[in-house]
Length: 259
Ligand code: UDP
Image (cartoon, rainbow, N blue to C red; front, side, top):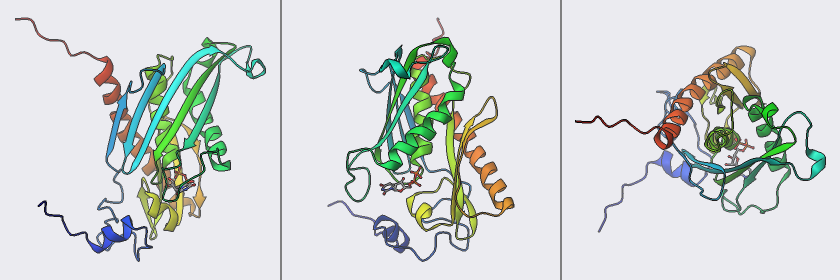
C-alpha cells in the first residue's frame, strides 16, 4: 500500500479553507511554503485547442486557466465595429466547478467587470489599427480558481493572442502583490487574498515597461503600495520568461547540426 505523508497543521488548514491563525510565520514563510517574494509554481503551454485560431493553458499554483482566441474577423453585431481599428471582445468566465461552492454558469457581475478590465489590459499591446471593422474574440475559462485569476487570465490571453498570429507591440503579463500579516507578499493565493489586508493586481508590458492594469483592493500606505507594485512587476518579469519559453517550445525549432 502506498504510504501517505501526514499533512502538517498548516497544510490541513489551507486545504480545508479553515481560517488559519497566521499567514506568514516568524521566518517569513507562507502557508504553502513560499517566501514573501516567491511566485507559485507556473506551467504554460500554447496551441492547446486545435479548433481555436490561438490558444494557451496556464497553471499557477492551484489556478487552471484555458484561453481560446478567434480572429481578427468581421465584427458582429455590426454596430460594435470601429472604422479605424479592430475591437477586442473578451469574456472571462469561471466554470461552475472552479471554486469551492458550485458557481452558477451564468456570467456574474464580477465576470462582466473582469472581462472589461482584462480587455483594457490587453488592448494597448495589440496593433488594433491594422484590422479596421474587425473583432478579436478572447474567451478565458477559469477551470480552477485559487486567487489571482484576473492576472492569470491576462497572462494566458496574451499567449493565446500571440499563438493566433495577431501582431502585438509586446506581450502582456500580469501578477498581483498584496499584504498578508502586515507583510508585502507576491502572488497571493485565495486564503491570503481573503484574510490578508490588501491585493494589488498589475498587468505589464515587459519590453515597453508600461503598466496596463493597476487595481487595489484593501488598504496600503503609499510606501507599501509602491513596494507592492515593484514586487508585482518583478513577478511579471519572471512570468514573462515563462511566456517566452512556452512560445519558443511551439514555434522555435532547434537547428540540428549536420554531420
Ligand atoms: N472566488 C470564489 N468564488 C467566486 C469568485 C471568486 O471562490 O465567485 C475566489 C477565487 O478563488 C478567486 C478569489 O476568490 O480566485 C479571488 O477573487 P478576486 O475577485 O479577488 O479575483 P482574482 O484574485 O481571482 O483576480
